[in-house]
Image 1 (tube, helix red, strand yellow):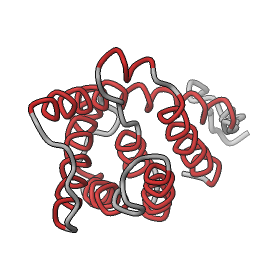
Image 2 (cartoon, rainbow, N blue to C red):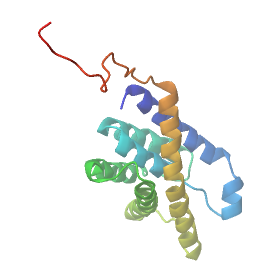
Image 3 (cartoon, rainbow, N blue to C red):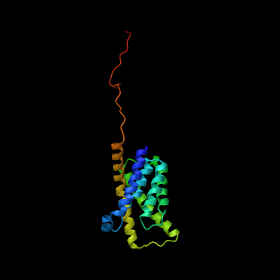
Image 4 (cartoon, rainbow, N blue to C red):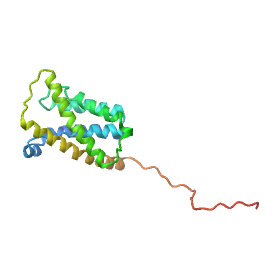
Length: 183
């Protein structure tokens, strides 16, 4: 992974947080806002290095908390923990498979709000909880799971469009026969 991909991930994190704050059509239609940061953390932890995961969790969490009702910095730890756990086991994960991306997006989108709620309750905050919270958590989880493979496709397309492909033509043809003789 090169620096261009890291910059694209950070730019996407900024745009996702901004669009989540501005766009309200999905929020009013479903009753909740789908969070795209766990999907970005999954992508960054599978395709990037630990510095990229840390930057996405730090900047994305601070941007998200500054535009939401959360206390500043409460989203940092859940995003980083999810990204770190996936990054540590990424050699065992089939990262190019659709179902693996879907399941990781499902788990990350379920774990981040649950850990954030746990942190909010442990610091003495009193968020509104009820049966509607279960609906919101379900929509958040399924939306993040569906958008994670889509994010992988979009980032792969951007990476192919903005980076060069090495020129692999050589002068040696594998079907050529080399005759050796004395003359």
